[in-house]
Image 1 (cartoon, one colour):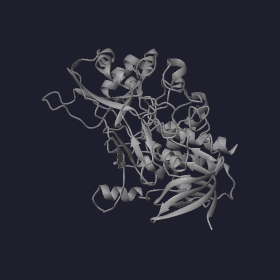
Image 2 (image 1 turned 30 degrees about the vertical axis):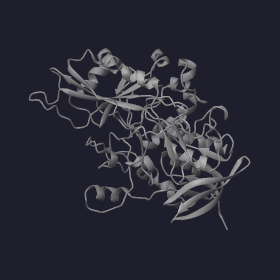
Image 3 (image 1 turned 180 degrees about the horizontal axis):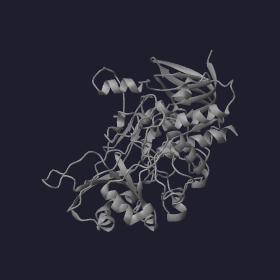
Image 4 (image 1 turned 90 degrees about the vertical axis):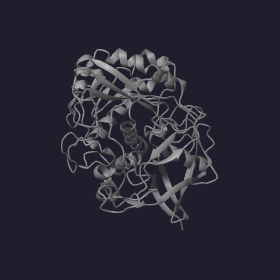
Length: 475
């Protein structure tokens, strides 16, 4: 007899966990929930022991990739907590205009909801993650961040003096002071596994929801597809211990990443031409600015600031928006007497989803095929302007020389836009509440839902969307 559940959730990363948290708070005490996690649970203490060389573990972790002929890689962590195990903890909000890209600038696709629709859920996620952030920001927000902002470096302070609210201490899930079971950020720049547990993870922040008696979690259980009939999904097929198994669910939530959400739907016979189409992410370019008579010291976290001078405005009609990250990793200029006369910035550009970049089926039902040609000309036009923009926005500093990397960042670790949200099945896969247009009991979460991507990190927004999706689904 097939096991039956009120709710089946795929994955335990940000998207799934924030949905489950909200669901548990609002659903009845008699609900029966199954969570299927393709990886294992490796506790933080075990990961630390592995890092110190004190323990031998076989952990499939960040670095497992899907490559394409274009040399592009897509990185993910296939274990409990997903990308929370390896993320850096950058949590800027999107700007209001990011949701109206086509209406305002004639490019990309508008979102079917607005900044105002998401803002209450931003506040809730920021409280759960104990975000450290500044008093003033370029995006509207009500009330202060839960924790005080991280300190700026010398050069950051000069830039903030010049640009005001367009240059701020980065909002981040790296705690600026000890909170709960998390220590204060130690600025050691080993954020993939924070040595003081300062960074929010699913384990240290939401691990308790998986101990709820209503929840059954199965590990090493890879979901491969759904049984569908008419406008509903009836059951989930998954592989565990090399056996294919099945579970029936009244509601099914896909909270894997943008590669596997699309792949599961394609394996299920989803014929919507938008399903799998548009895989993309931001593009990052590093630049090093060398100074005369200016020592760059201070800053209390790995990425000390975000710059918005190149982000929003009429230029988005022609070329991509860019957010600036000030990297405060341990560095030294290898010239006598000039040890600290250096800044490292990363310029991160938005891209536009393109239908020819897509997820497709392969001969192996467990392994998707990723077809990727290149990023858009829109993004490339933004990158091509970088020398000019550095001179425009940083030229007041005593710059001796500038070194700009060729575009060589193979990934920004953000996989987006393969199950876009929109108004109908002609332009998207899911609606504004993240419910599949055809299969009305299937909720599809995460950054795969993004109809357009912004320069900003996607995690805070996708977590807020998960809280909203759970609330709307249970209304």
